[in-house]
Length: 192
Image 1 (cartoon, rainbow, N blue to C red):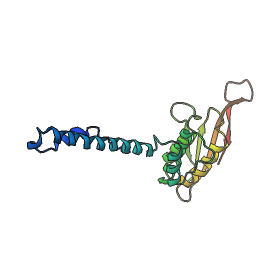
Image 2: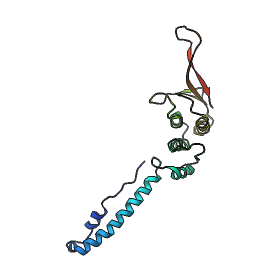
Image 3: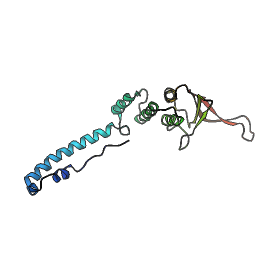
Image 4: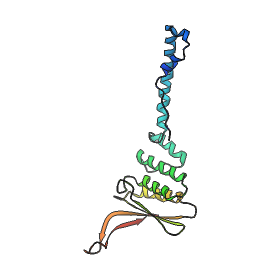
């Protein structure tokens, strides 16, 4: 993504365009300074406005407008940071080519803050030609709204004819007996 570049020296640039035989005229210099000061003020306002329109900086109404453009309504997500991640996940979904890397990225964006470890602890299993299972570990239950968002986005990101199963592994361990550790596991929830 390219960000706009702000020009901060309009006055100096304007003075550089003055013809050399008017260079010593204080009146021409003053007129150029007045005009370029107005241009600089306009530049600064436009630059601030452009920055508010970019996804990393957008808040509130600007963020909702960006979300509506790509088909991601705010819904129950009142916090701007969460909604911003969901917009990014929708962008990944919209440009998906059915690759499992894209689906991992979507899981990472939607469940960010709930996944264990610094890198998302996500495992992908190809089960046959047209079935994928994605398992991910969470530190706590992310709630129904985020799980429903995954249920909405992951099938859209899958390639045509490919089915996907999402399994969330909860942090609660279980043990059948006091044996050597072969019977230790964690509970999982199938969410799709």
